[in-house]
Length: 355
Ligand code: SAH
Ligand code: SF4
View 1 (cartoon, rainbow, N blue to C red):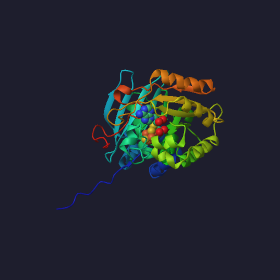
View 2 (tube, protein in one colour):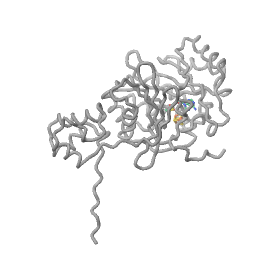
View 3 (tube, protein in one colour):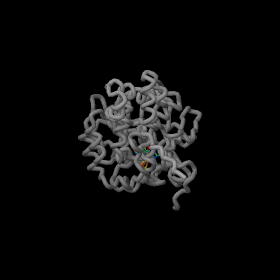
View 4 (tube, rainbow, N blue to C red):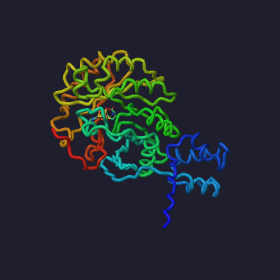
């Protein structure tokens, strides 16, 4: 009996750069405009397959389809909230699942993407962090996630903002995130893309060196080093002083500011003293502060609660009196567990960590 001949796995066109496409097409049609056409189909029109690339000659489409395919992650679950928020779970070939969120805003939709399948930073107020580390998504996987969300939600060609505020720490995966930002930049200007970091100093320096930089948001969440280490264990590698120094040196395009996110935890980091320390810490950095009342999760974040509205207003008032630009983020998507810190990827499979 003869063994079946294994068919070689076809490569994935999603995530390819112009140069990689040119290389793939070299034997079929080496003219540069052909690679550009394919690139546009993948990054702008979000084609779901080679057959859709109708401005390529049939023979070229057949040749290309024999060598490569268009493969996005599979949407394995969709949940919709009454505020229009859609949370999508996306599955990859190795079984990893991440979550992405689409939030309708005024005049655009904000797409929140994951950069890793878990998070090693381990913040005590974040479900992703409580569940622990995962692996980096490749640039192609992140871009595939973006394409899958746009296609599924009917948003191809629609105005969108992109935020890397889903699962994972984007600046522990700078290579993957930078490739995805470059591909997304084909349709969304980097000034409409925000990377949120827990404060990975070497990652911030790498982001600063990118030619087309997205906006930077930093999750501060505490006003002293000791408090920050308790809340964000891995962030203890980079002391506040070092973090603030790299942020003071971060190149800001005209009109841009750094956003500081501050998750508010009742009785932990919401005191008047905290509020008074913040402006002193951030002095000299063009910035705005985004207060995020904790999104609770009984199962994974038991014991932690958001302050009441009076406390949040008093805290915000102290910042405003110190001439800080401050906003409160009342998170969308809470009812479908799609709000900040509620993403976990593995749909109802993992038990909570033992106390
Ligand atoms: N890892 C990155 C990006 C993902 S988290 C970061 O930490 O910045 C995105 C934002 O959600 C962060 O500002 C984080 O502080 C916040 N967040 C995490 N858990 C939260 C929760 N349970 N409630 C409200 N915000 C939360
Ligand atoms: Fe990771 Fe951000 Fe969650 Fe902290 S808040 S555990 S850095 S995803």
